[in-house]
Picture 1: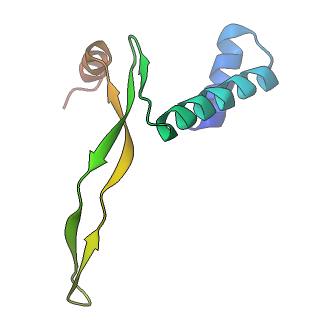
Picture 2: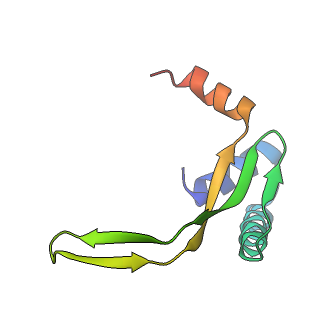
Length: 95
């Protein structure tokens, strides 16, 4: 699903102007990005958490050039779904 599809679905479900829904979705994404950039995690009860994970420095290999490089320590944003969310997805999409 793409952002446009999310906006269209919310517009249809809530009878809200598409322009307003688009602004809200954009603002939500901006707030999440800004919070994570500041080092703050974002917790959405009943949905999940956007958290920052710290990656330690490591040595990586370039197989084609047969060289090694050092990858510096860095932070990456991740999403962790809440337990209920995971269970619901698991029930509807069994292996």
